[in-house]
Length: 461
Image (cartoon, rainbow, N blue to C red; front, side, top):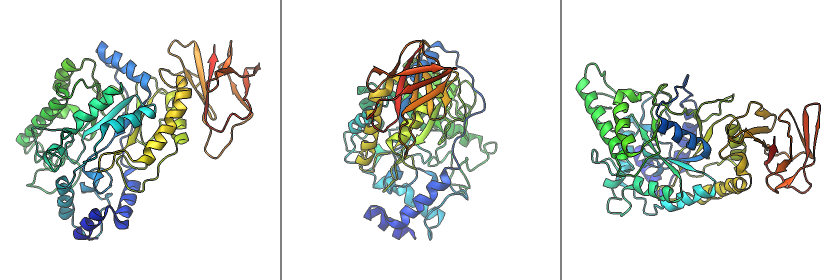
């Protein structure tokens, strides 16, 4: 497919060839994700520790990717990175493709942009915090930056009263009592001080040797600090989480310490997430597209997608509500939080198929959320389909039976240890379950006609 045909496809809304490219790319992208960093360093700032504890209570959040890539409905940013695992349409040269991608800024006009709809959909899902992409690797800003014209606020959307998109997103989620986080990519492939036009762009790294061009890199550091200062300086309100992506560039390379010192004067206790960069500025870990194999006793978050992609793509295949609930139960029992990828359309709304699934997740959490929110780990945390969590005072345990898709609930559920001294109560009914304890094994009998879904029980110790 050449660029003219690609643009024609875009005008039609996204054709089969583009979809094939997107699908193939999504499969490749799964192998190039941020793993969990090796080791953890606890913060020493009491306000950060307090904010982390509050964040750990929330358990479930939204990671919203929205940018140029929503216009054609393709994977975010990566198609302009010239690495050998990238798939682009046949018949286009790399430079042609990059120009086509940059020029999406001239047509991105989300006239239906409705951050209130996003926030309501997330609230209905039972989510409690949000991470919004202020800038992805492609460098396109979803905020009104003074330091670049490559921004949603400078293109066709410039005259819209909501042109400073990030501000309106943050405000909408704050109105729903969400903890608010700003995603920011440390690499910026559009910035001339990262990918300098004097050289070709062979990979995701700066396309020049920093030692040979220290002035270029110094310009980039200043540029990055200026933009981070815009986001965290107060014009966008207090920020709870600064979520820094692009782990091939460490925060210290762009002067993160200085940024955080200033940011925490505006937002005391600001959580810094310098992804995969072990040290004082990675306040929680972020394994991507995976759940750690074992329980972890320091703050962490699994980053997973509702579809197969972070942003919106046409005709996406979404995970079921039950699959998300079961994964959330596992993550919670292992001590983590789940941030779920949701991608609004190019017009600026979350499509109805996503909204419906999110509401189903929320329906389950409204009944069973006591076993999720505000809980902490307990040593005996997993037996088969059962995941155990603990209240913060460790006087109550919760057992979540994660019913696999395609299976039915058993008449009885049995586990070893975690022996109740009082009742075992089914959260969905508030009624005690018939319970027997013999030889260290607990057996509860489920009521008939209970329905077929994952369930949670309260175990009084």
